[in-house]
Image (cartoon, rainbow over all chains, first blue to last red; front, side, top):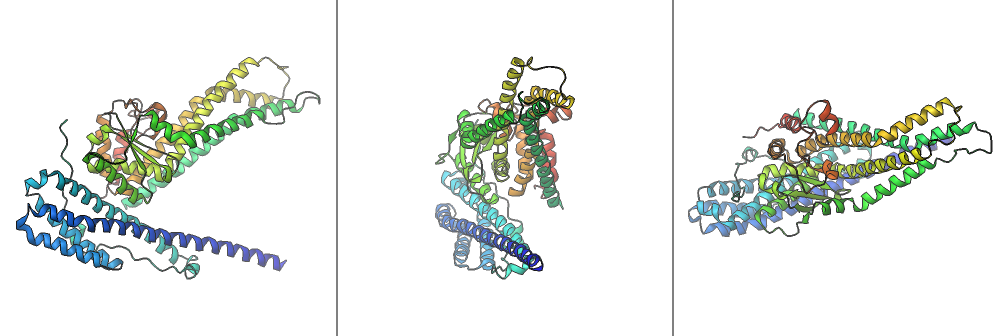
Length: 190
Length: 326
C-alpha cells in the first residue's frame, strides 16, 4: 500500500516537473525569439540611416554636425554588444535621429521630396517596429523572470538552466520624451 | 492602475464569452438530442415489438451535419469571405498609402508577437476592416480603400491593432465556427420543421409519458425559435469579443486614444459597406450594414447588434488612455 502511494506521489511530482520544465523552456525560447525580432529591426534601421543621410545631405549642408552625430551614433550602435549596451547606444541613436527630423521641419524642399518622405515613412515604421519588438521582449522577459523566480517553479529553474533575462530599459530621461515629429504623408486631393 | 483596468476588462470579457459559448453548445446539444430524449421516454414503456427510440438519430444527424458545416468553414471560410468582398491581396505595395498600410500591419504583428498576416484591399469607399482565418498562421487582414483615405497613420494603427487582437485572441476562429453553427442550426430547424409538419399526426395515442410530451413540446418550440436564438447568442459573443479586441488592441499599440478617434471617424461614415456581405458583419471593425441597431443603446441594441455602440466603445477606450495625447 505504502509503495503504491509513494509511486503515485513520485509520478505526480515527475509529471509536474516535466510540465514546469517545458513551460520554462518555451518561455526562454520566446525571449530569444523576441530578441531576434528586435535585432532584425535594429539592423534594418542601421541600413536605412546611411541612405537617409546621403539623401538629405544635399539639402542640409549647414547641419553637418547633426548629420555626423547621427552617423557616429549609428556606428556605435552597430558595434554595441549585450542588452544594456545596445539599449544605451540605440537610445542615443534615437535621440540623434530625433534632432535630425526636428531640423528637417525647417527645410520645405525636404518635406516635399517624395524620396525623403518615403525614407521617413520607412524610418518611422522601423522605429515603431523597434518599439513594439522591445515591448514584446520586455513583456515576455518579465513573464519568464517571474515564472522562474516563483515557487515551486523555482525548484526546476536550475534544471532548465533558466537565468533572469535582462530587460531593455530606457535610461536616458531624454528618450522618454521622444520629440513628436509629424511624418504622415500629405493627404491626396480628394 | 489603468493598466489593471485594461487587464480586468480583458478578463471579464473572456469569462463572459466563455459562458456564452458554453450556452451555445448546450443549446445546440438540446436541439440535437432533446428530441431523441423525448422520443426515447415516449417509446420506453411501449410493449416490445413496437418501435423503441434507442439510437439518437436526430442528434447524430445534427452532429454530423454541424461537423460538416464547421469543417467546410474551417477549410474554405476565409477564402470565401475574401472572395465575396472582391478583396485583392496586397503583395508589393505600389503607393505610399499602401506601403504605410504594409508597415503598420507589420508593426502590429510584431507587437502581438505573431507572424505578419496576409493583407487584402477591398475596393469600397466606405471605411471598414476585418480579420479572418483560423489561427495566427493562416490569418488575413482586409481593409477598404475608404479606410486608407479616411484615417491618419496613428488611427490606422489603432484599427489594425484591433484586428490583430481578433487574430491573437483567436476570435477569427471562434467567429468563423459560430457563424457556421448559426447557419447549420437555421438549416436544421428548417428541415426538422418540415419533417414534423409532415409526420405530425402519426402515433398520437394520447396516453404517453407526460414528461416525454413536455420535453417534446419544449423541443419543438425551441426548433421553431432556434434560428433567432442562435443568431442572438452569436451576436452576444461578437459584442463581447469586440470590447475585448478594443482592449487587447490598446495593449498592443499602447495608444487607445488612436483607436477611439478612428472609431469616431468611422461613425461619421456610417453608411453601408456594400462590398462586405451581411454574413461576415461580425468580423468587421464597425457594422458594415450601416448604423441600424448598433447605435441604439439599451435593450434593443443590446440584443440585435453584432457590434456594441461606438459611443460606448469610445468611452471605454478613453477610459484606458493613460497617456493623454499632447
